[in-house]
Length: 358
Image (cartoon, rainbow, N blue to C red; front, side, top):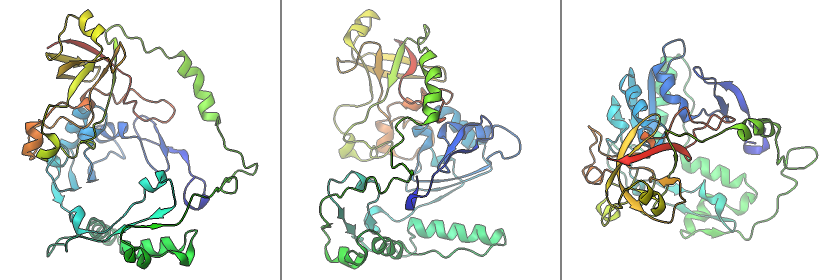
């Protein structure tokens, strides 16, 4: 369900090549490369990225690399020439985080009280610099005029935020000026139950077992993930000093012992005749990487783990510190065909892999 309790949608349309379902107007990233590479009507020939790095963050990254290289045009909103933006014809750098205002949306959903906080810019933006919303608005205006359409007005985020605050549950008790006057935030009190009033079903019941999920159970139960040629199951992991593929180009966050090791249970290390600290090859259906082995009982036997967001050793990346701590990309092993069948999303954990001495 979307904003204002309006129904969302699932599988209203499908991808061109594989027929994977949309959800809320979005399509699975596992379909991106094939939609670029497969000729025919509707083939993707141009791409816009904003602060994303899908070469390192989506399955079968090497396949996507080849796809991006063959695009007719690509534009990226980004500060860096990274593993993805190196393929862009144009890179449009926005203002830095300290040069624009901020109001959190996503993480507020995890707050334990009703709070609101607005941060004003620390520094004025440099002359000629544009915020990301200004760049997107300018691109939208140009596309509209090329299509002979009247451009939609671009409202500054401050105006949109103020309207949103005043149309929320607190009405005139909460507005942007109040947040500016209280830079450390405003506490509006404890959470208040919204159930069952907010439920849109006539019977005011939560659908815990929707029909599409139940219908998929038989396929799931019949599925066997045992593969003799790829006997291990690969899972990812994260680290407190990393966030996706970001934060690796700053020395203070990458100093110390390297963090891109393949974790394996000591029993498996011994059984394969390997040693902690040696280089091992990890291979899946789609790729192969070489990583340092770390024996640890923090993973189960039969399971191995590589962290997410590394793999900065690719040609053309202009991030010297990140390249000096390159690591390998777990998404060179994840498989764009290894899916959660119901949603079409890539299964990024439990990927079948084989391990051997490098």
